[in-house]
Length: 161
Image (cartoon, rainbow, N blue to C red):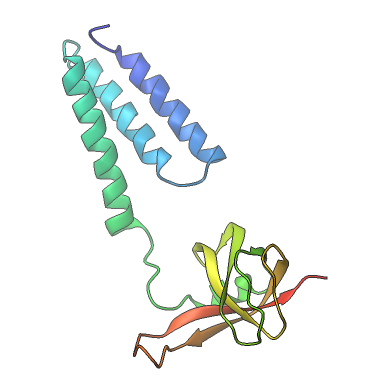
């Protein structure tokens, strides 16, 4: 096949955009948009060689993805807003690492992002083993004194019994 037809690109784009609904990464969407734009370009320039179609698809998809993550995505720097913190309290996740002594830092993962991230550091007042279900009870801001690092957030959790 020397050329993909314009409707092949449009169909691929629609499939990728719909796939984004199933796999919410917000990356597949941009490749779907790149395929749709390539299809529109193929309508305007019907004799466009396959190599140029693939190049346009690649550049536009990567360009859209870069622009989204670099400029248009809501900034998630520093600490989350008070509203995000309130929503985070009560969310449940699974301990990815253990923290056996009070104050020890572990990592918890969530099936739905909490304050923009699927994984957070946590601390608890009780021993936590890997795989245990945890509930967020507070969002704390800590500063790493030893490294002189900037303040960052950590979740205080409890086991779900």
